[in-house]
Image (cartoon, rainbow, N blue to C red; front, side, top):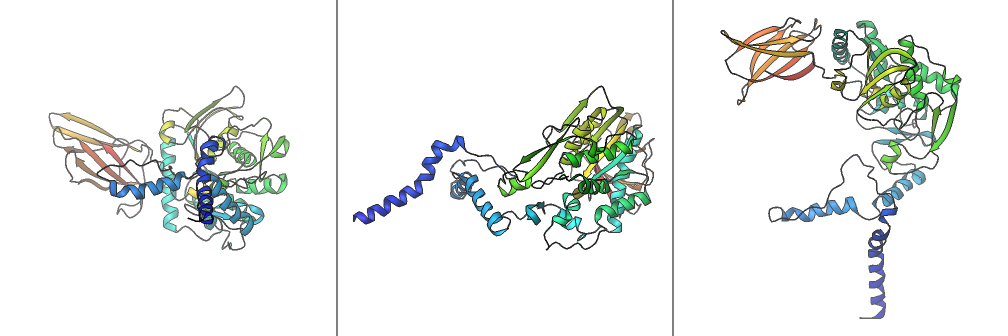
Length: 439
């Protein structure tokens, strides 16, 4: 073999092997965090039963764990973003002046530009779902407030690229707010105007440039609007001292796996400090000796974490949960259901609107389906499935259920489950909720 050929082989081996060799020494000193919304594949185990699938499984594992993976992805994403103004993630849209927007899920860009609207049936269903929540809350003697947080795409619509045409200002959120005002007595807090005014007057970035969420100023404005609904005063944003810091990442930047040095702005508001931003435990409590004595229970999504951390400075007792069952045992004065605009199409909380009582006496076994709150205006269809069978039997079809309950008989010793459907009409054409109960 000629020296030249040997040299080429050595060069190839060096190029191929150097990433693995350098990774061995440096992997603990570089960024290896998983920025993808999925689990990284683990090393597959070879077995006689699945040996034929091992090559494909190992290739998937290798692609997920290749040395310098984050750095290579970041380099590729950076070239797309900075050189070609293109997004390497189909769920991230690059707007004007480097603003990033989310297009996944229900696509809040389409939602906030009026490219998609709700039908009358959609509005009636959503209103019915929220009315169920309101009835359950009121049965506990609590005030109910539906808090709708605007999308970032709604507040910073002018930063969307020219390709995103605004079809109408009457977006899904405005449709729903108007419908609830006209057809229900639900108290609604929709701080759109307050946020737009603060954006214009404060000079702050109310929402994050590289993230889907609002920043501390946006959360403060939302908290102030909610407090005003409860007749609790908070200072104007202009009266609160703000300390600016510059940050380089957000959830949208993470989706692109890029870091943009000092590309975003955050503000700490004196007296209303927020720790960990939109992060938080699934259940949190905040207590202090000053502020309003009204006790708040807040069912939240990611927007509600920062919102509640601001509210803790204005109320003595605040209970916050991502799961509604965490709040069932909380004796509150006000129950706030916080939801971001992009999730407004399905606000069903799955609360225990119905319960089941079983009783056996000399006449046999009776099952009582009981309303736990006022279900006037809702119709129930229920089907029972005895344990150990695949058969479903109708026990109620399009009936109303009071808080006294509706009773039906089953054979002695029978246990099973009830599949229950709730409708806005007796014909079962307008469903709003379903649940499963054991008997």
